[in-house]
Image (cartoon, rainbow over all chains, first blue to last red; front, top):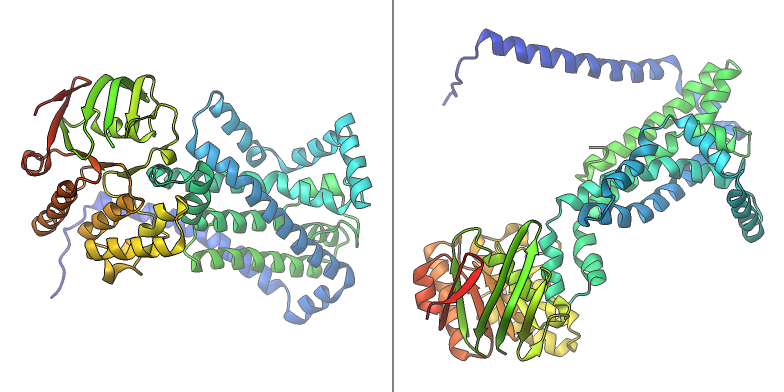
Length: 274
Length: 214
């Protein structure tokens, strides 16, 4: 049995052709960029670049700091997203706007703001206390990388989780509260299990953002080889000394990690970044 | 197990309700009717402790309940559409209230078996809500509300959106619940036949006031 469709007008065809044309142009740009990267180098050149000790160090440091940042971001974003999604309070619109500031602020400005913050009296005290407790300072040290990444990634995680909690039916936890649960128990046993996809999406998004964060890290942590160099800093450093092959090799690692994150999210049925 | 409201008022958003007074004796089956938007659901939420009590006195089973948390009111609440927990099996739904009310394991298992038997949920115990029909969902929601042996059962249109056969079966179950008289029920409905069949006491919510009609 063949299906028949109503005839579309010439105007409709032009409209959809324009939409498809614009969409394809952008899609082509993204694919062309990735293909250009991939075709610029060879597998042996990538292997050689990744075998260099400073790049291996940056690789390890990036993955460790991004993972710590993702965990911290989710830890903070769950309660903030829940409060923002569920509760009404005076000044909520202002708080909402402040929470979005790291998303719209230029990355370098975030780094500079962190640097200035840790030069204030309170910042210096915090750094001294941290050093006394852990034997390492913050500014221009590894902890500063996590703080710089966290400042941006957490904002994205909050936004994801706020949407997640907004979409959950608040009546579920209300029913739970009439059946013997405290608000805390309703949150842990009813709300959070229902929000697991959002939590995982927020974690993946925070991790991917943290891995690619450059501006705040460069300003607040520096890009000292074998110390505070993360993969985006490597791209910058290799470019600045003219080693384009190494810069591309590291870029491809970052691309693979980002695509891997998105694919994992899609496989799990998540809405990473959507 | 009685329910008493004296000059109770509430407000949800910009919607004020009350002052409302009503009495439902212990073991009675009260049916509450009223136009859409008249505040029937808000009244149930007020009794359940989910909407704020702005003024008046509320007592459930002879206990002043103005300041009690929803968890401590010993109620069972079935909201419109059931509102099941999408990450829990049917068995976990039936076990929910006994678990959070701290019942011993053996007593919890006994209660789940009893309700599964009575509401014909045995074949569904391991199923998640996503695959259940409308009638099955309502039976699970009713079982969940009854599981903790509440003193007061609040039912918000429990029989709406059910096919004729399922409507009749659940109606029979609610009749048996009424005839046993071990729980006081307040049942919101739009259906006069349902009200005639089930209600020992009938109320109408009109212009923010509850009127006893029989």
